Length: 206
Image (cartoon, rainbow, N blue to C red; front, side, top):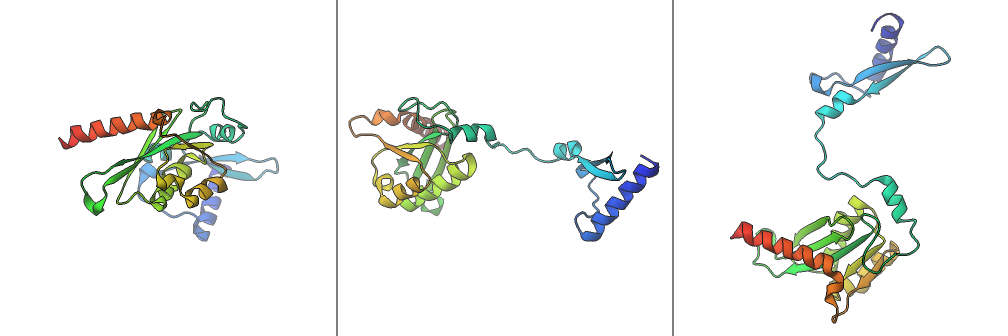
């Protein structure tokens, strides 16, 4: 790069350095190449090619869902079926697993959630199965990562039937579907996830 284009690059870099927007580094793997584009008014616009920088950055093992999928989820007016769901992350099943021998932090229960479409499982160990812990889990592990779901399926446990938890769901316009004592298999997705978790725990802990 030379001539007028190189001069434009130097001027833009000097401006960015002066205001503290960029700074000098010694890590060449972080290098992001600049591309100069001449505008209709004759001035230069400095753009950035992030190809090399993206290669140097660690990849997230838990990619975010597609934006268009989330938009479609919230455009639904009704579910096509009571249990199955046509969109990823629009319906979750949730259950409590335990009591286990106390571990570090006195945790002895597992909160388990599974997406009915992708079969993605979220698990967190807790010391108690309070409504507060369930609500925190649902917010942190489901809503902030996958968006606000269309529905949640649970059993009739006190932590799920609590007025505070149901007000929390209603405030987010999440339908709460509770299984009956006579038909616990209605929440079969999360029951299957529980079996997988228990099998792996037994295998690892011997």
